[in-house]
Every structure is written in C-alpha cells, then in structure tokens.
Length: 255
Image (tube, rainbow, N blue to C red; front, top):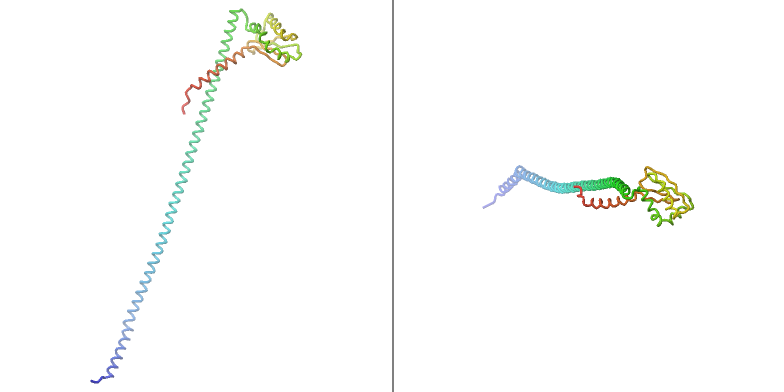
C-alpha cells in the first residue's frame, strides 16, 4: 500500500489552517475572556483586601475613639466627683463656721446676760445693804455709816502708816471727801485719829454727791478709801463666781 503524500500534506496543511483558525477566532477570545475574568477577579480580590484593610483601620480608629471616649468620661466623672466633694467640703466648712459663730454669739449673749444680772443684783444688793447698814447703825448705835467708819480709821491706818508718811512727803494737808457732810464731832474725831500717825497733817473736808457712802482720804500721792464700793466689789466677785458655776450647768443651745 502506497502513501499519497500529496493527500497527507494537504491534510496536514488543512489541520494547521484549522488550528490557526481555531486559535484566531475561538481560543483567543476564550483566552482573552479568561484573562479579563482573572483580571476582574484579581481586582475584586485587591478591592476586598483594601476594604478589609480599611475595615481594620476603621476598627482600630473606633477602638481608639471608644477608649478615648471612655477615658474622657472617666475624667469628666472624676472632675464632677472632685467638684462635688469640694462643694460638699465648702458647705460643711461654712456650716461649721456658722455653728462656731452661733456658739460664740450664744456665749457672748450668756456672758452679757450674766454681767447684766450681776450688775442688777449688785446694784440691788448695794442699795439694800446700804439701807440695812444705815438702819442697823442708826437703830443699834444711833450713828451714821461715816461715824462708824471714822471710829475704826485708827485701826485701818496702822498697817499703812509708813506708806502714808512716805506719800505725804512733807505735805501738811490731806483731803477727806464724803458723800454727805460730816458732823463737827466726827471731823474732830477723824483729825485726832489721823494725827496719831501723821501728826503734822491737817485735814480739809469736802462732799461729793456722786461718791459712794463712806469716806476717801487723799494724802499726797496716796489715796485710801473706806466706802461701800470695796464691799460691793467683794460682793460682785462672790456673785460672779456663783453665777459662773451656775452658767456651766445651763443647757447648751441646740445646734
């Protein structure tokens, strides 16, 4: 059997033409479509990856913003708490200061009332004491308060004679003041009493309506007095001590 090489070559040529035609009109569009599809898929993958990266960035920003927001909220809360505590401390301080001031004012009021009460009691006691003293002297001894004082001047001058002699410093006159005028007999008696210790001193007598009952004697730079004020001072001290102890027992003012 012989081979028809012309036919073989023709078939080979036809096959090659067919391959070229297939490649030109069939395979190329398919390959181009596949390439375009691959490019589209690659682009979509790249877009997806970019979107994922953007999402990661957005998530990171969100986390940071959320953390910053929480931090800001905590800071604002701390500031609000600090401001509240400061305001509370201020209110407590103001209330404490007001309470202390009220207590101080209350104590001042009590002290004022105590002093006023003592003064009223002292004035009342002094007046009553004077009336009783004068009445007792008049009823029992038929003499005035000044007469009774003069009778005891010698005893009162004895402890202070040296000081009076030094205060007199060579002066020859001494001033005696009473609220009511002394009788001549009482003046003579007082002169004799004083001259026992100050023999060269001559007394001069005067009256002072504002003076407490009793007598005041001025010798040089020294002054001695025997008046009801001295007794009233002792009475006032006694009343003050009693009223002070009584004030301690008073109930405290309600806060």
